[in-house]
Amino acid sequence: MKQNKILITGGTGFIGYHLSKKCIKLGWSVTSLSSNSPKPNKIIQGVKYLILDITDKKKLFKIKKDFDYIVNLAGYVDHSNKKKTLESHYIGCKNLASLFLNKKIKKFVQVGSSIEYGKSRSPQIENKKNSQSTFSIYGKAKLLSTKYLMAIYKKEKFPTTVIRLYLVYGPKQDINRVIPITIKNALLDKKFNCSSGLQFRDFIYIDDVINAILKTLKNRKTNGEIINIGSNKPVRIKDLIIRICYLVGSGKPIFGKIKLRKDEIKSLYPNINKAHKILKWRPKISLNTGLKRTIKYYKNAKFN
Image (cartoon, rainbow, N blue to C red; front, side, top):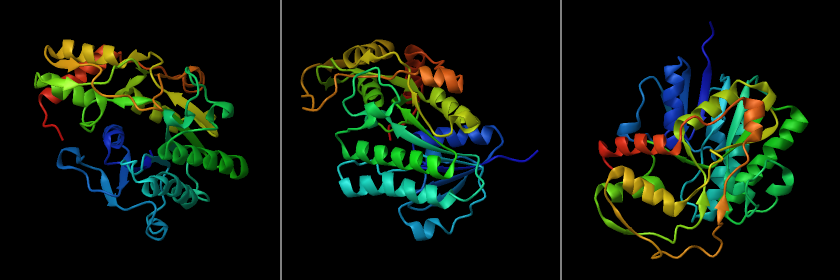
């Protein structure tokens, strides 16, 4: 039986790590392509690591191209640098897609973001009318990538799908995200400043996301589609923080000390009916279960 070959760009990041680990477990040949080497605690036996910036088209086009599947998770994480953010997310995506445009790949999955919807009212639905405006350079870069991929699907029948992720969490996530930093402060039993926490957000556990990506890779009906991946169970940030402190058994959040951004969206969550219908996918991990698993990990790990 032929071994599945997958290229994961951004493979040393949070989602890339978990996807690589799952694919190795399934017996796939996994190549991770990132601009940075993996941290020691994120090296996975059996994965081939390539250190390369996908905005460097000349070097990118020298890599082997005999992959069945491509998942693009690459992109500059510090969005304060507008030029690098646009180049890494949009130009990088175009370079990667053009590399495989005339190759016999089975699927190119672009990992998009809920930020592409801008200030569209929740629950957000995958249609063009809701996706015309966005307020950040990251959102703009992601939206441009989506439009480019949908265009080459229509013109060239390029087998691509865009999945728009909401707030993914779980073990090994960077500490500066809301759930890990709250867990850290709670475990240290510290007083810590928070916003009012009145905004609603949608959190989805990493295992559910990996399951959604794998289902997308194997499903031809998803070609040319944009699909939301989230829990569809928005939670108020204040309630999330209180719940984490309760599950940890310590922590002293002080709400209202941090001002919300002027452009802060009050409610952000998806309609996931399309994922149900096309992918036959539903999230399986409840917020409570996911938080317990994540807390257990951070209790035994160094925060890095």
